[in-house]
Length: 340
Image 1 (cartoon, helix red, strand yellow):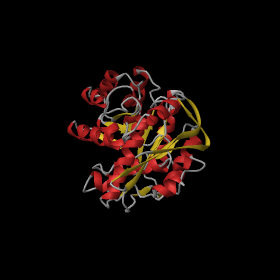
Image 2 (cartoon, helix red, strand yellow):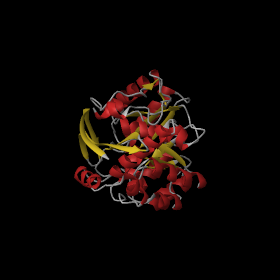
Image 3 (cartoon, helix red, strand yellow):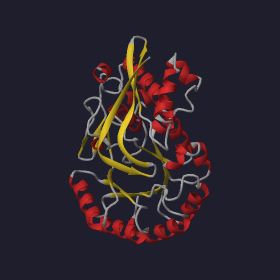
């Protein structure tokens, strides 16, 4: 196994609950399976995975990539595990001369809709950003909420729905910013807006509170940050979500997401796959995972534009709100081109 480090600047700082992100740093991992090379990516994200230093240490301890996955030796380092698991999956798909998505599911999608994220801004700017996204071809928008006064967020959601009409799907992402009383009030106030879901209205650990919100309101509830705090099986057992937002980097690899998706399907819960502001290798991995899932939901994969540069050219850019799945074997990107 070979490991190469990389660092990519963002076009502009991204504010999160764990502080501003100005740069993404991580590791590219190359493995060999039966003479076929595969590539993976580990890009740790504070609050979701191990630290960069812990990731580096975990990768340095891997002598046999396949054994590391089979023995779960990287259980405490999801970003590192993601890199190794993705690299092995890529190599095996190349060996089998199949696109990665097709190696995951025989009836995989060849293209997928993706959502456009509209950041936190005043009403007029929010509406303008939403209209621009729709003009660019997106028919699913995710609005960031929770940082402003609840009345302001309600007004923003109403203004966007009025501006884009009923044919555009709307999602709201609170990033765990509300308490139960506030979430209850907002959900009641927006019940007529036909939102696809409200993502993480309460803090991550409050599974019982999310379950209560599901019972009290018609707007579906999605969990995101909760999956970094509790095992997905516990989230499913708590009846706290209609949708699980799965980040392959945070869950530890494509195989982990596919396993969660299988159990979620049995529980009647949908899956939306998103990235963690990754480089092209991990984004492609997420695209192939999403393509292997049933259903027509838009996924949160349109994040390449956040980066000022990348480790290689992207073979699956967003076009009119759609990402096409590469048809070439594996991820659809040449490992040697990435590593050179």
